[in-house]
Structure formats: C-alpha cells, structure tokens
Amino acid sequence: MTSIHRIFEFSLYNDVVRNLVQSGESHNQLGDGWAEQRYIQIKAEDEEKAHQELLRRYPEHIGFVVTSVVELFD
Image (cartoon, rainbow, N blue to C red; front, side, top):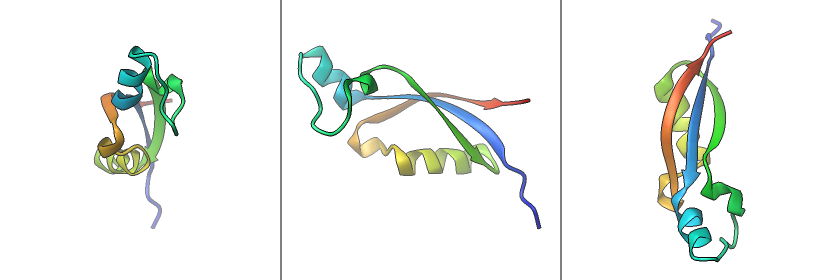
C-alpha cells in the first residue's frame, strides 16, 4: 500500500535565541539566525503528522515557536 505524502511548510523561530540576540548575546548551540523566521518543509500524510515531525526536530521546550503552516501544491 502506497501512502500519499503532502508537503507542509512551517514558519518558526527560536524564542530563546531571539531574546539572547536582543540582549546582545548568542546561544551556545543555535546560531543567531534562529532569532528570525525560518521556513521548514515537511513531507507527511497529513498536517498533524507533519506537525508532530516538526516538533520532534524543533521542540517547543527548547524555545522553538511555530507561527504558521501552509500546504504547498504543485
């Protein structure tokens, strides 16, 4: 059985990095670029599974904040 994968694009930033950059400091593991919005594409069967995968890679408990998600179409 073949599953159909869709592409979801999430925008996110890291709040911890953003706060550090605003105070003139840097995070010890994440680059300053994470203070700004980034766009990450995830392939998944549905939006819920895509969101789960995103949070696995970019967990909220270390400061990642998702601001939007859109499904991309050809």
